[in-house]
Image (cartoon, rainbow, N blue to C red; front, side):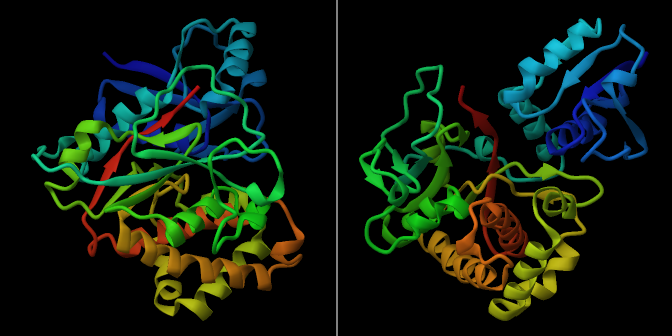
Amino acid sequence: MQTLITIYGAQMVAVSVYYAIKELYSECRIQCFLVKEQAGNPYAIDGIPVLTLDRYRETHIKVLIATPENHHPAIIRDLEAKGIKDHLCMDSQKEAALMERYYEKKGYRILHAYPAGSSRAGLSIFMSKFYRDQPLKGNYQTPDWIYPIQAGAALTDIRIARLCDNHGDNISEKNGNYSELSALYWVGKHADGDYLGLFHYRRILDVQEEDLYRIKENDIDVILPFPTIHYPSINEHHKRYLKEQDWEAMVQALAECAPPYARALPQIFTGQYFYNYNMLVAKKQIFQDFCNWMYPILARTEELSEPKGWERTDRYIGYLGENLTALYFLYHQNDFHIAHTGRRMLV
């Protein structure tokens, strides 16, 4: 007997959850996707209709809410106002567990599945924070290998972390467009450790203390979040978040600065798996090589953009960084020993 499920959402979280359910649970069938409004959303995903809540009449359904967690309370209110009571929120922990099963079946290397050894990897992970961030409701205790760093410290006299991204060689004043990438730049230039990495103050990779004994034992080069899945391809990411002229500026900069990657981009971006969030952990040399590759491309993109990058504060460079991260590590997927783990949202 089949279980019918409706998914609320139609973007990367919903699409990822849909493909995982389709792959793992043959007894479940997704009957439709629900959204608040049609604008910005597809009309169908993999042949399954995307419907607006106001035009949907059925109420005796199971709804799986698969959107970023900050939208869940409003969605629950809308569903219950419609008379839909049977709903489940796909929070980041549930999503991570589901995607771990999916990617394990797909043959991906899963960080938590490696055997632990006796040697502990030395990690220096920096947690990007901004002075306007809202306080966390919970009391999250960071391990001693995670260091808060204030991103965009050059833009304010307010200090929220001992470590700031405006010392030494830095691009702190560009934070309005680079977002957490101004902190990533600082880490690549100044940090030390066997492995370097960047998390966000609300969004982190699921790396536990016991995983430090897996990383070194198995000579892992890079740790990345489970890819998000996009329909019909990962080109949907830049179409959603970027102006076409900004994308074209980046493509031109890529062709000038890194021609082999520019030639590979069209084929790679026909795939569905994308590395979101500008978060990674990598051996120091790989981390630095990646930074030395990406930032000249972004700087050239600023020059080619209209308006110029330094005339704007719309975070487009941060979104382009996600695309370049995906391109770089998909290009090198057979060159590096890459392990994957879940993404956690702190509330």
